[in-house]
Image (cartoon, rainbow, N blue to C red; front, side):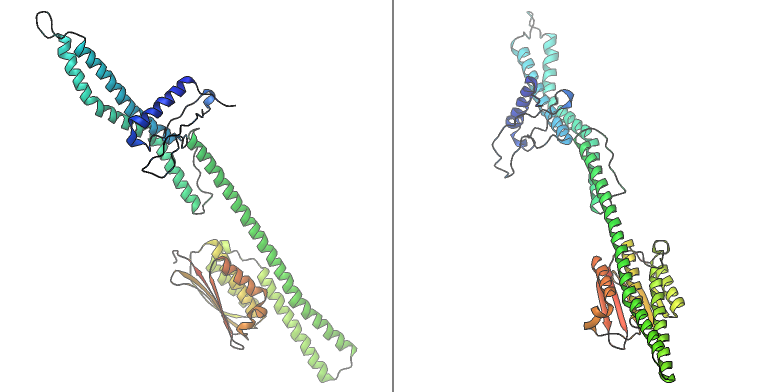
Length: 414
């Protein structure tokens, strides 16, 4: 339903536009009529705007209604009261002085100055002299007093937007204090922050779910590629030994091959079980989790692991990625390189976090690293790429392998 302004509102609007355009041309930037009219039920009245000539001193388009913001309304009211009251008081004083000076007698028939002339004429002159600064001061103080709370609300809103821009969607909400335009901004800001928090939470849940599915798919492939193939080879050896007539020396050699295959299957199963065993990274921290991982591999596989792990205060995402990379590198060294010695090092150097895993395994040619490590190397590369880091792999046949990860982080490390 369109709201029609009343004649009083139209007249007031026209007078204000004329006053800000003609009487105060130097404040053309302020003459955008920082004013608001309300009809019944607090519905804003949209008046048809004028089309004044654009300012020659500025190339910006001139809009008579830039917005009905509360801050503009209060500051505009301060300007209006300051200047219009000065004009009104000045005109009234001019009329009074003119009436006193030209229409009333100043002397009695006896030639004496009348009492009202000796009192009111100097008083009127004094009032003309002090009215201008007094009303200017009153208008300025009125504008500051009416806008102080609104400025504080806008500062709170600006502070909250900076916190949101830094990625914190959970800790801060802006209280809605009034049902005005700034209140609408505060309400919409809170709604936006809540939606961002919910969206980030859903994204984290989906990411965790994808990680779990990827881990399950990887373990399934490992079971198929390693365990299943070795079991199939073990079955063929057993069937061949049963059906064929072998000499004792050949039979003993086949039996030793069966033992080695069974030992390989056992080792593969232990490595996979170690990967399936959950390590409470959130409860222990990265240093303790890596040390526990080294202890488990040493206890289950009789593997010599030398650790040099610094106590670092890192973000959760970075700690999780570094732990998974170390776990994958140790698993590859045990399963593929048949390493008997591994060095695990974590340190901070020049605003960088460095993770280094070295082994004395059989190594490989650098051009064959993707086929050698398969999905394990791909997983490490993806984790490092997500954190915008660097992954370096150095290896030579029969000379071991060194995997180094460098991540940028400016934090307080102990």
